[in-house]
Image 1 (tube, each protein chain N blue to C red):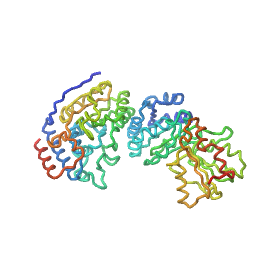
Image 2: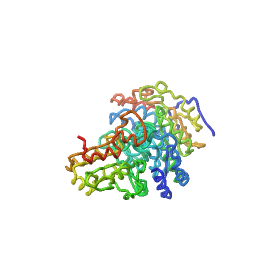
Image 3: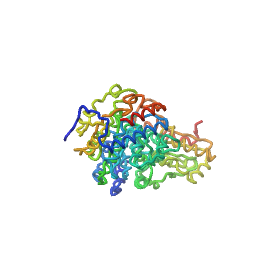
Image 4: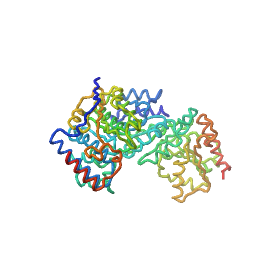
Length: 274
Length: 303
């Protein structure tokens, strides 16, 4: 089995092509506007994984595939990615966090094409994804399943149960991405429950593990197309919480806080300039 | 009962959507099923949280998963996965808990499930089935395959008297008739009460009813007539009072304004003496043995 581990990932934070630059700009601005309009937080963790979601939806997923957002608190980024590929409309996004909406703060159990499960309590996505991947194999279909977790989420014992299961079952059609932004609910991942390095731990399971810059969409796409040996394929995406907005980057409070008008204007300017 | 369970499932092996997951259990019970299902029999290891999530994923993929473990390990350990992954999506996954109530006897309290169906019935769409006899499984399992919602199958020890054939599985079944009142027992306990009931004179013998499904099914007219004819009602179940069938039945009686004058509800009490023993020992400690229960109908009604 080939294991690839890149120890030090230089974060470019810039996509490489005009196409990805444009879609990234539109998506970031739409994400900021949606969160500002609805007055809700979680923007930091949404910005850390937006490039991953855009890459998954634009460059990787086919109709036969499934995506599971295990870090359900990044629902905003998921909705914006679905908007970016035309599956949700501006009108849909305007209902984010409103009464009588499908676009609640964490993904809903039904009603949105492309969201197979309600998530939000951490540690469920890997098992759900393993079930989907096993189902595809038993049914003899060719699809793949991609699951995005946070890094703090690996505090949950259920994630390791699922990793053991997926490894034992040899689920080559499963890819698990870790949004490794280094911050969790009430501190850094190193302070709260240090699991560094996750890559090494995955590799110790005998899993092919790639470490990539989680804001380099081309690198992400390349990693996601990499064939796994015995599966699942693990991708540790090094990211920046609040990526692209200087006063949010790597700041714990932006896991929670909504933006005031001045902060929203400043964030939009910075994103536009990036 | 798990042998009857396994045999009944074997009859369903040709269903291509049927998958079976076990939490590393099934010695001397599930080997034939394992061999018959091949790749559709999945030993998910000692990892119940993941097993339930995987079952939800399989169900989303169009499969019909059955998920098996010892009762407390299948309802308590992965409760959030049952709630979020199965019930929020109303997925037709069948959870199978072996040894409900005090079924694991002297194995100890960690292996007992005294709160299982009460807890699970709080969840959206959950149906609970508590077969009383081994013969129930051949009827019940095809029904569960046709269900479109989550289910919990509580397996116990079949306590069918050797000299008597019980009626076919139904949510409510009348097992014995008499003039002494009404006795409702949940699941296998009803089978254990049949012989002692039949041994007492008809004048004091209760109408013995077996309840095997929850939420509470529609009360049959015959049961309503039995309740109206007598002043005494005893409900017995191997489950704690909170969330019990007895509580649900009492609410139904109140709403229908048909309340017998003397009602007693006998339930699992945990471990009153702090000692452990067989299922029979624990039933007796709780007053769930036949001798204690039937005193209610022979003039010794408690206050």
